Amino acid sequence: MRLAGKVALITGAGSGQGREAAVLFAREGAKVVVTDVNEEGLKETVEMVRSAGGEAAGRRVDVADAAQVQDGVALAVRSFGALNVLYNNAGVYLRGQDGPVTRVEEDIWDTVLTVNLKSMFLCCRYAIPEMIKVGGGSIVNTASVAGLAGTNFHAYSASKGGMIALSRSIATTYAPQNIRSNVICPGFIETPMTAEISGSQRLLQAYIESTPLHKAGKPLDIAYMALYLASDEAAFVTGGVFIVDGGVMAR
Ligand SMILES: NC(=O)c1ccc[n+]([C@@H]2O[C@H](COP(=O)([O-])OP(=O)(O)OC[C@H]3O[C@@H](n4cnc5c(N)ncnc54)[C@H](O)[C@@H]3O)[C@@H](O)[C@H]2O)c1
Image 1 (tube, helix red, strand yellow):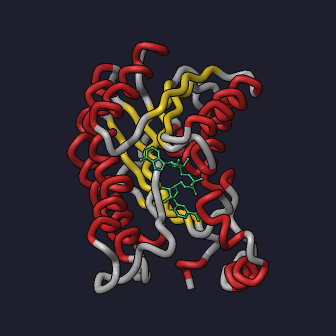
Image 2 (cartoon, protein in one colour):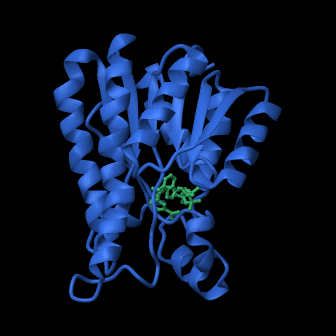
C-alpha cells in the first residue's frame, strides 16, 4: 500500500476532491483525519472511509480560524500518534460575487483570500512542527489553473496564485527538515463547486470541447496526483506545480 503507516490530515473533505482523496488515501493504508465546515458531508466521508476498510477521525474545522485549525492538527496527533501528510484542499469559489478588481466587493475579496490562502498559512503553521517531530512530511496544496492564467474572477485567481508562491517558499525553507510541499493545479473538475456548469449541458459541452482530452475531470483524477505527492514515491519532489487539466494549459 502506497501510504502504509502514514497519518494524513485533509481539509475540505466533506465533499468533492477532498472526500475522494480521503477514501483513496485510506485504501492505500493511511489513517485519515478529515475536516470541513460541512458536518453532514464530513459524517458521510467518515462512513465511506470506514466502509472501505480504513480508519478515520472527523472534526468540524473552519480553515479560516486559527484555534480550530490547531484543534484539527491536535486531533490527528491524539488519534493516530503523528502527522505525516497535510492536504490543503478546502477552498471556495464565489460564483457571481467574485469578479474583476473594479467590481469585486472588498468583503468578497477578503473572504476568498482568507478561506483559500490564509488557511494554508494557518494549517502549515500548526502542522509543520508536528511533521518535524517525526522526521518530515508531505504538504499537498490544491491551487488551480486559475492561479497560473488570467481570469475574470480576480480574488480566486489571486488566492490560488498566492498558494503556489507560498508552497514554493515552504518547500525551500523546510527542505532541511525533510518537509516537501507541492501544488496541484486542477482544471475543470466535476464536483459540487462546479455543479452549475456540470448541470448545464451547454456549459459542460463547451468545457469538454475546449479540452484537448475531450472530457471533464473527475475528483479521482486529482486524488491520484495527491496520492503520489503524499507518498514516498515523491521523495525527491518538492516545490513542484502539477497541472491536471486534460491539456487545457498546454494549448
Ligand atoms: N472543481 C473544480 O473545477 C476546481 C478546479 C480547480 C481548483 N479547485 C479547488 O479544489 C479544491 C476542492 O474543491 P472541490 O472542487 O472538491 O469543491 P467542493 O465545494 O466539493 O469542496 C470544497 C470543500 O471545502 C469546504 N470548505 C469551504 N470553506 C471552508 C472553510 N472555511 N473551512 C473548511 N472547509 C471549507 C467545503 O465545505 C467543501 O466541502 C478547492 O480548493 C477548489 O478551489 C476546484
